Image 1 (cartoon, rainbow, N blue to C red):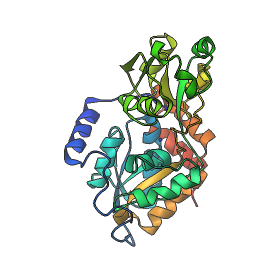
Image 2 (spheres, one colour):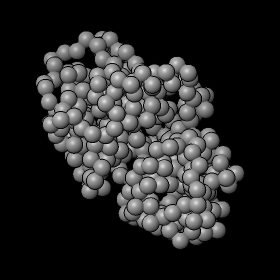
Image 3 (cartoon, rainbow, N blue to C red):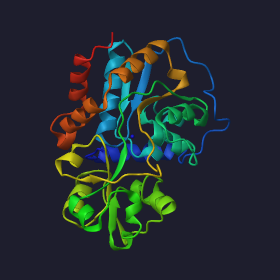
Length: 310
């Protein structure tokens, strides 16, 4: 699943290290992946909700957690866990039971060569690719897509409209962003593999955060990755480069849950949230928590008060 201002504390960093140490790591499914494994319970008394290390994920986790708590379920939260490699290990080793995810990103994490690139096809391909014991619930119409962006000045200078246009000029440009942007198919690695783009240099900054934005606006880097629910794109007149070869898959919001916590009341509550989320609404909420102006838990509480689930 930008979009994202990262504020990490020493406590959060320690939690990440602890989860990484006890997790499986990597993207290899557990043996026998492809069906849910086990059976869903009739009821759960408690559930641990996790999130990735960016504000939108924490916001969605807060919405899930508060809605489930309102149903009388004891909820624990482990937010700001880390990047996908860390929180996927956490849900597989049962450190957490539920987290908000993104359809395309989840699919390629477990099935790196997935050929699907349409929203419904991507969603349907996820469950067979998951390890035993994990399931996805309903996908939301709300999306948050990966986006490779440049400033308008850079786009005009090099006549850039799509990622394909970067091939001829990449050697003169510096890319920058979070470490994941360098190594993932949706980032620099995929641009090299699919489009043949070679950059002059890569600067490790933050994923769609203030460091990357400042470096881009100061022309210290010319290419970075943001996310489509981030107001920084519109606010700074950034140009999103088209992706004709689909290295960026559709990313609808979807809950990823352990089967042993997939009780009917949990499913009903989460699917009701999914149905009410919209891309526009998510964009507005992300803007509200950007820069710490409002807390994720307060914005989640406000959204739930305006979007009753029953």
